[in-house]
Amino acid sequence: MGRRINTRQTRKPQIRVVGAGITEYWYLKHLKPLLGLKYELYPRLFGNESMTNINKLIDEGLEANTHVICLFDEDVKQWDDVEAQRINDLHQKYDKSKNVTLCCSMPSIEYWFLLHYENTNRHLRTSHDATKALQKYIPRFAKNEHFLRPQRWVVDLVENGKTTDAIKRAKAFGRKGGSYTDIWKVIEKNS
Image 1: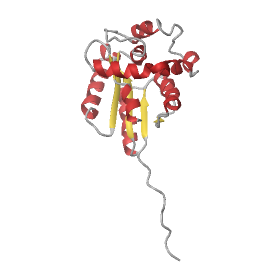
Image 2: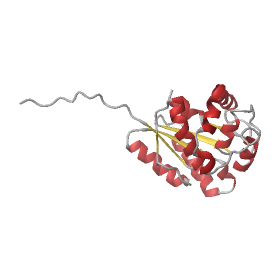
Image 3: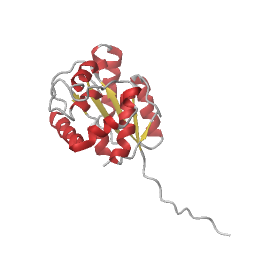
């Protein structure tokens, strides 16, 4: 009897998204079905990860032959010199990588959400500042599971071309100005 021939196509490497924070986790979890994006969230529930752990998660993704997209906030650089150096090291290591996409926000992902409503790159020093500015448009916005778990807030971000507007704004600003974000890369890498 002859050998079996494998007729399965080899799978294209997956996209793995790693990050820190429950806001990032719930946003990405809700965004995936809304935009038909194809990625796995890893770990299953983002925690309050240090940059050391983020680096390990990136390495695990690369070992698993996946493209790794990494989300993190950069406001920590203002008060933690050790984490600031680790963030700088991460940029040095992966900014030009074909297999890793860094999606950072200054001060935080809430700035990305703000861009869905407002064309600004004014300096928002902390995550709290970004959240306060965002609450002008989403009054009940809170960084807790009670608010984040229901999908409606992400549906509101996606409706009426707001995400397209946010992508255009973030790209136009780049890393100029007091606040910036690369979260749009998650969407583009999946398109």
